[in-house]
Each structure stands twice: as C-alpha cells, then as structure tokens.
Image 1: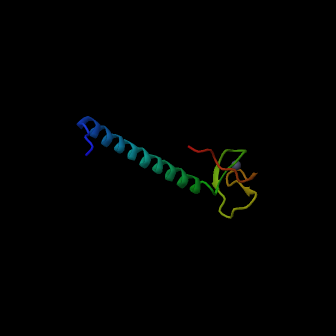
Image 2: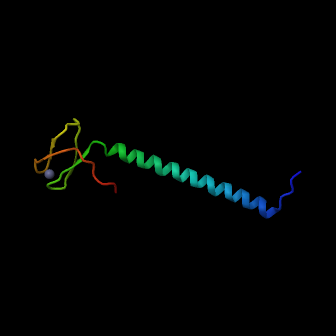
Image 3: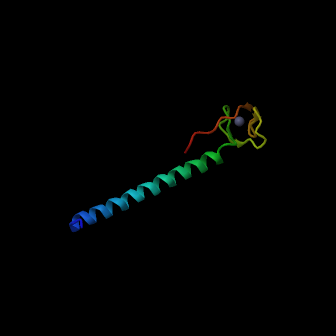
Length: 79
Ligand SMILES: [Zn+2]
C-alpha cells in the first residue's frame, strides 16, 4: 500500500481541480472564438466609410449599404 500524507493528497486533488478548470476554460475560449469567427464570416468592412455590413449573397465584390462603394470581402478585426 502506498502511504500518502494529507498534504500530498490535498495537493494532488487541488492540482487536478485546477488542471480541469484550465481545460474547461481553454475549451470555452476555443468555442467562443469559433462562434465569433462563424458569425463574422459574412461581414464586410467598408474601406471608405468604415461601415460593417453583411454580404448575404457571398459576392466577390459587394456594394456598401451606406456609401455605395465596392468592397472585397474582408473580415472586420476581432473585438
Ligand atoms: Zn461604405
């Protein structure tokens, strides 16, 4: 039988708990970023007026709804 002190047992338990929290946190951040990237996939940032609009038809070049200038699909910067 392996003898383990109370301190070692508590340390191992806390280490496993902190490691699990870290893994859950990393998974949550990854899922959040993935959701944000998919939500921003159709957005276009106008290079003239800075307006962000949705390119629903996924056209190569789309017209800005504010100023009418033509823009290529470039995703806006992450928040
Ligand atoms: Zn514009």
